[in-house]
Amino acid sequence: MEKSIYSAEYQQLCALLRQLRLDAGLTQVEVARRLGEPQSFVSKYESGERRLDIIELKYVAEAIGSELRVIAEFVEKRRGYAN
Image 1: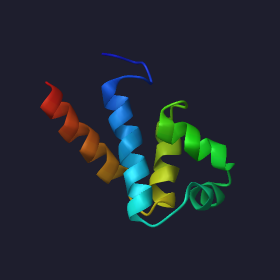
Image 2: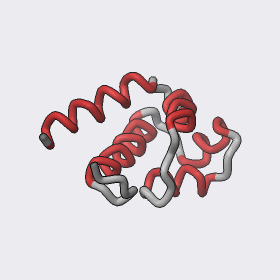
Image 3: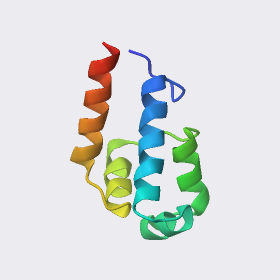
Image 4: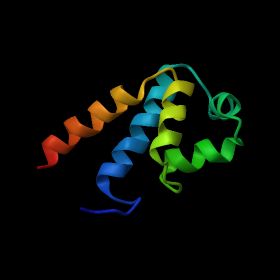
């Protein structure tokens, strides 16, 4: 199990979060405002510079109009392709 924030699997998650934000028509500033965080928080997790814990991921999902379940299903499906 690769734990690095630079793993391909984690980078796919970051790309998904960015795409979900864009699909929702939201800017990083808008998402940050919803989270009560600075815009750099969003930039850092989208670029993979910052790793999100499960609780933060839940709040991010809600802020971009998604659900933690949807994101988890994406990760599980992608994992299936890698194995």
